[in-house]
Length: 406
Image 1 (cartoon, rainbow, N blue to C red):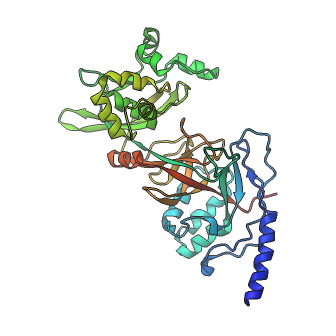
Image 2 (cartoon, rainbow, N blue to C red; image 1 turned 90 degrees about the vertical axis):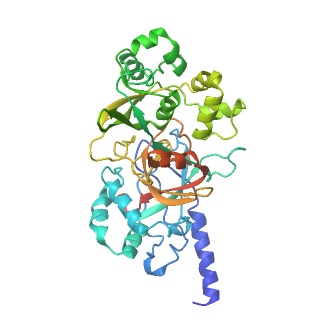
Image 3 (cartoon, rainbow, N blue to C red; image 1 turned 45 degrees about the vertical axis):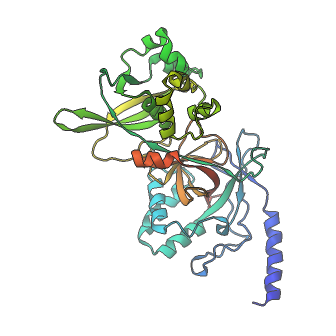
C-alpha cells in the first residue's frame, strides 16, 4: 500500500474512533453494558494472530442506566492499548480463563465451552481467540480531581494468606483470640446497622460477655490478630505433641461493618513510622509498647471467622465470589466499579512491575474506587513480604465478550 493510501486510511480510522469515544458506564445491577463498535485501531502488531474486526462487529447488550450510583466509566479500546499483552504467557492466561469457568460471571458463561475445548490449541490460536471474542474496555474513574488528575490511573496493592502458629485453647503465650460472629452481630447486620468498634469489642465487659464461647483459636501476638483481620483469612498451624501440626483454614465470616482505617497510615501520621510495612510496624510496636493499644484501636473495623481443617487439597482461601483464590491470578475489586467473575487486565509499573490477565474474585473493605485492585499474592511468609511492598500506579481493563445477543 502506498504512503498516500496509508495516510488516507489513518484519517478515516481517526474519524471512526472519534465517533466511538464516549465512555461506557457499567451498571453493577445488570451484566449488560453499552458497547460501541470496536476501536478503529488495528488489533495487535502480529498479523498472524490478529483478527480483522470492523465497524460491523457485534455490539453488546442494552444501555446501562446512568442514574445508578456507579464509580467507573468503561472506554472501548483495542488490543494495541493493552500494556504488556504479549508478555504474559498464553498458557498461563488460558489456565486462568479455564479456572474462571468454574464459576463464571453470567456474561462469560456462554464462552466457557469454547474455552475448555480450546485448551490444547496452538498458542497463536488461543491468543487469536481471545482477541476475537473479548473486547477490552479501559476502566477509568468518572471524575478527575486534584488528587487524581488522570482518570485512568488508580492504585494496585496486594494481600496474602498468612500462615501463623495457633492453639485451639488459650495459655500464657497464646492469649489473643479470633472469634466467630455472635448472634447480636448477625442481628445488627440483618438490620443494616454497624456493630461495636474494635475498641468497644476489646474493652467493654458487655461486648466481651457477648463473645463468650465464640473464640475459635488463640494467637501469641496481637499484631498477628490485626494482620489476620486485614487479610481476611489465614492458615493456622496448631501443634500436636509428637506429630506434625494440624493446619486449619480461618475463613472470613462477617465484619462489624465499621469503616476500615489503616493502622500503618495512623502510625505514620503520629510520627511513629516512615514506611508502613509489616516488619516496620512490628518493630515500632515492640519499641513503643505504650502506643500499641492506641494503634490497634485506630482501626475500628473488626473481622469474625469460621474455622475448618484445611485437608489435603490446599487451595487458596475462598473469596467473595465464592471460589478459591488463585495466587497471582485473583484480585479484589470494588464491585461498584467492576463485576465479580470477569477477566481483567492489569498494567502496573513500579518496584514490582506487573502486566497480566487476572480474575475479579474478591472484595475488601479498603478496596474502594474505580481503578482499584488488590492482588492476591498467595500463602505464607514470602507472599506476605512481596504483598507488603506492593503499592503502585495501576491501569485496568475489563475484558468483556463481544458476541452478546441483542
